[in-house]
Amino acid sequence: MSSNAIDAPAAAPSRQPAGRRRKGAFLSLLVSGGLITALYWNLDVRLVGETLLDADRLWLVLSVGMIVPITLLRALRFFWVTPRGALPGVAEAARLTVVASAFNVFLPAKTGDLVKSYFVAKRGHVSAGVSIAIVVYERLCDLFGLITWCLVGWLVGQPQAAGLPALFWPILAAFGALCAVLISSEVAAELLRRVIQRVLRSGRLSGLRHLAEGWPDLLQLIDGRRRLVVPFSLALWLVHLFQIWTFTVTLGADVPFTVCASLAAVALMAGQLPWTFAGLGSTDVALVVLLAAYMPAESAAAMGVLISTRNLLPPLFGIPFMRPYLASAVDEARRWKRGVAEEPA
Image (tube, rainbow, N blue to C red; front, top):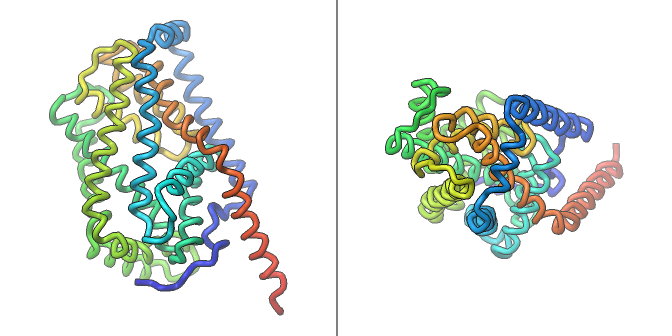
């Protein structure tokens, strides 16, 4: 396992120029705004509002309130994935989880998650590759859980989704199998490291090279916990999809759980594409198209509004905690720059 510790500035949340970050955030907002405008241009906005106003109040509170335990479960998994000693406890993992969610609102392609990598590297003295691999490992566990329940729902519920080609499901199954291999096989991780090291010998794509180098090390560090993390991720995403199904109950739509789990999972995957702001727009359009056989378009759009709370409320929880983490990262970067400036030519 690689033993090189990483200097804190090298694992900073984002090394992109500020102008590029602002441009990426602006483009995300532009794409989301365009998709939402196009969607609601073809819908009766009044009916969408009425659907939300007529929602069952008790189910609304229960369904939206599930965001809190889901966030805590995400934090618990993050704590299990980090090397021992990198975090003082689950409470710190929870704070970093919501702070990263807040940064994701301002940074493109969910690069705010690298905030977690930065502080794990700083406190746990792990390599750059391991710190980056933690974030990617969680993302692959999420995809594995989401794809698994999507396919289970498709096999059991046989949903009617005219917008999806027949090849979509076997391709999705293959991608899910690839995720399973990557999060569980040390042999595959070592093979990936050797291939990337051979292909990327220059300084280009250094982040990908660091990731490939740290992936086998991370699997070794969490060896015993992998038997817990992977099934926990499956259970976590079952809770996610149950929450989304409760949104249909809140709106009075009669959609079987298996159908909702399968098609909502596809919509969530569309929302993970990096060109929108917190998934807004792409998830909404996907819901309206995919659920056309089960609910009116206006009800599906209202469901998209409720789903958007999943991406917007955790950042609100994280805003009060952002200042000390941001100040720490800025101070470390300033010290690093001063050290570079003072080095003899």
